[in-house]
Amino acid sequence: MKKFLKITGIVLLVILAILIALPFLFKDKIAEQIRVVANESLNATLDFNDLSISLFSNFPHATVTLEGLTIDGAGNFESVRLAELGSVSATVNIMSLLGETMQIESVSIANGKLDVRVLEDGSANYDIAKADDTETPEPATEEEEGGAFALELQSYELVNLDIEYSDATLPMTASIKTLNHSGSGDFTASKTLLETKTSMARLDVEYDKVKYIRKAVVDMIVNLDLDLENMHFVFAQNEVGINDLKLGIDGSLDMPGDDMAMDITFGAKDANFKSLLSLVPAEFATDLKGVEAAGTMSFNGFVKGGMSETSMPGYGIDIKVKDGRFNYPDLPKSVENIQVDMMVDASDGNNFDATVVDIKRFYMEMADNPVDLRLRLTTPESDPNIDCSVQAKVILDNLADVIPLEEGETISGSINADLALKGRMSTIEQEKYEEFDAAGQVILQQVAFRSSAFMYPMDVDVAYLEFTPKALKLNQFEGRIGQSDLQAQGQMDNYLAFALRDELLHGNFSMTSSLLDLNELMGPETE
Image (tube, rainbow, N blue to C red):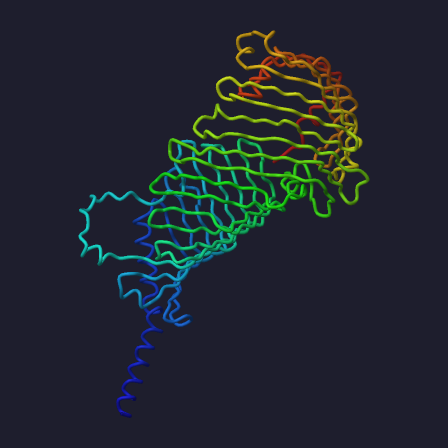
């Protein structure tokens, strides 16, 4: 017995020594083989600085880690680095390598950045897998299917990633700073609960050169009941937080093939107006920390329909605010009597012309300066039909009493607006101006703006804009930039086509000046 135990001990020591030595003896060969196999399968160049294999930290699981992994594009994306990652690691059950199913306990991607791009022709730098040119195999027999290789995954995580995304087909850009995301579930079961958590320290989204989301903080808990056999996913116990706004999500998502079918609704969990106020972009409202706010609101919407290469789902958004107000803690006056009733209905995602934008009311009083807007837009693609009115009287000197200005900024003067537009675009194109109602004016008086962002002061003594169906007339303009003075008159003939159809703006102006300091107007010299 002693001899048997001694031999057994020696054998175990030898096996232990081999297990310890294997990762070091074959490390370089394994690393090179990973490079070869990966680059033979990709239309990109994959490389990494180091490979480590840990067998004993979580035995019988082994952890394989690639340090300093990079993926560089090819072709149209030759100069673009798709990924630069600190580490990519996977923990595998060693014993499963001897069977028909590889059990991957976890996958982790940490500390890096992704640069994702889509060009105008639809080509994307993340589409790097080479096409499979092999012939389609014959259907497998039951015996062959029984011996097929399978893979199990229990959990995954993305840690501290920065992502830049640009899509020229939309056009849209997005930027995510410090993304952390994790998910877990029994992916081997035909039905399971996938639990995910996501956070972003900063989210910026720009669509068609308009910044819709800026410096937003995102926290999400999304749990999905997965039916993997039928690729049917149901949302359960979900909350998406964007700044202070918390949204609940319900509905389902089906992915039976390449296409998707959605039936999703969402709505604000909190009726507090301040949570909606937190979505206001930084360009219009600086840090809202400490701001006092009151009023109620509702925020609801839906996404419903199919998504494929030829179709898009429909969507809708409904926002209401009642008796809203907010006041910055260090400022003497507040924005009062905020009333909002607006909706966007694009239920038919495949027919943009069926979209309806209806702002029944948008009203506020900024330090006793009233702003009242109403807008309804239908058939925006074929023949934009607009019904809009704006009344506003703003004393710019009072803005500093309600909204903090940047250090060194001052603004004064007044803006008076009273205009109404009603009619179809086709009447303008057919020069039936009598069938389109457009009347009103916008008048700026004694407007003075000073900012450290501009080297020279900007002043508008008077600017008088008159709206007619045929043209937007600049009846009078007198102003100064630095030492340069400007006086101008003229008109823009197709301002409605520019606003509603993004057509080229054209017009004619006459300008006079007693002094143009070109050194100031050209700005500082650069190397």
